Image 1 (cartoon, rainbow, N blue to C red):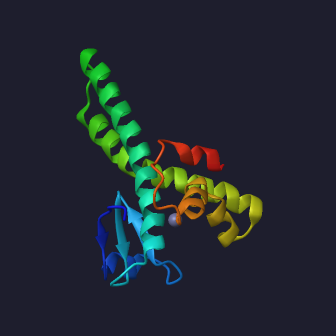
Image 2 (tube, helix red, strand yellow):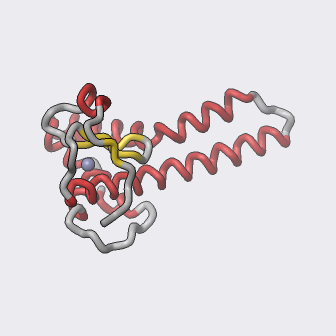
Length: 143
Ligand SMILES: [Zn+2]
């Protein structure tokens, strides 16, 4: 079994997640309205946590690099660093949203657009695969 942080009986999931979805991955943690999730669902969310960590860590490294260079050039507004960290935390969702929007404009159907998102394509394709190691940025191959 893959290890992920799961919040069961979550109010966040009850308030913000449509009834047709059982769980949501937010900032590397999983929130569900249910008191138990099946192994396939947990594995599906595990792939999402790995995808999230890819994008978060690259954005965070770019933030550190940019603030280091800005600091060395004596040009260092603190909100740049704070904004970079915040952007790193939400970059996955921006990418996810943009992909959804592009697919939705093309397909004119929510379900088809949702299943066309590369993150979802990978998670659905591999949700029954409990053994494979995650390869960084492998979701790019699911375009
Ligand atoms: Zn998913």
